[in-house]
Image (cartoon, rainbow, N blue to C red; front, side):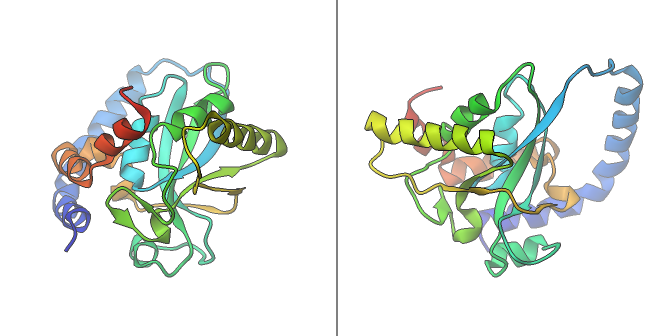
Length: 211
């Protein structure tokens, strides 16, 4: 069993107990939260393990929330078991909800590049297979132009001789199961073990330098 599969299995054992406490905490937070004045928009990215790329994007000012899910495949309403087996054509992805008054789509794209390895095909870090391929999925022509311009600038800079990240129009995005959402918050120890063991941060630093 892989480190990630073990972490997933162990996390399921504690979800029931955590659910009640989390629900009460959420209700209390809802009562005290200030009304949002954000103008939410969405962007879709795939950067390998969605636990990790979700955690990365939620650190970016202007991002409201991030959802883990599956996109760019053929099967309708795929499950994690189906996607992780590699037979649906999907890749693990995130849908970023952001305030366009605080962070722009091109800024999201630049941030994304610096949290993945764009030089490899059908893998990210220790996770191998097309279900872990990286991708940027534009939703209109302005996003397409921003993505292609960003990719071309990276290649022109000479930093990389090739970029394997998939650039495609957005297709159906299916939410992953509830236990995958905010996994890094629900299971911080297991998440940290997986992320460290996968070598994600070390590889990103080697590619991009310290952030």
